Length: 163
Image 1 (cartoon, rainbow, N blue to C red):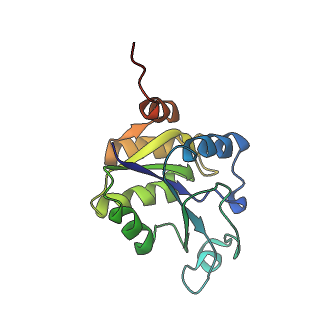
Image 2: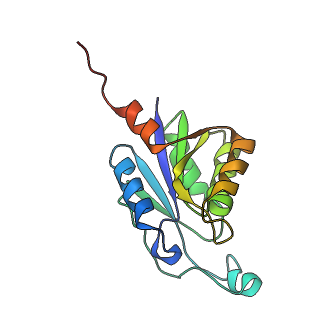
């Protein structure tokens, strides 16, 4: 199955746990990977005015990937979606920070672009509202149905042994 990994906002601003960074690194080393990094530009997305906080104006992805896309706000950019669509993949594996907000927003953008978003449930962390990410996982299952785990992906990528 042709697939790509989209890593959402795994950057210093959001203080991802080390287990998440390590787990995504293991997966991204075995599959073509893109990442989004959310940067603050009040002229584009009014985080400070509306929410009283904002992400950093400069930051970088904590995972080595094939390409990083900068975004301002919750959703993915048209550039990101076009790059993924050009690959002709069957599904887009999604993992990262803020399961019920930015990760879920990525799912909607991918779905609306005609792609098949698939959440990697053990490589996502929720917001401060629900660090377990379970709310986001439940919403993902409701809207997109497709979920998997890192172990399932790695098992499918492993070459089969013949006797």
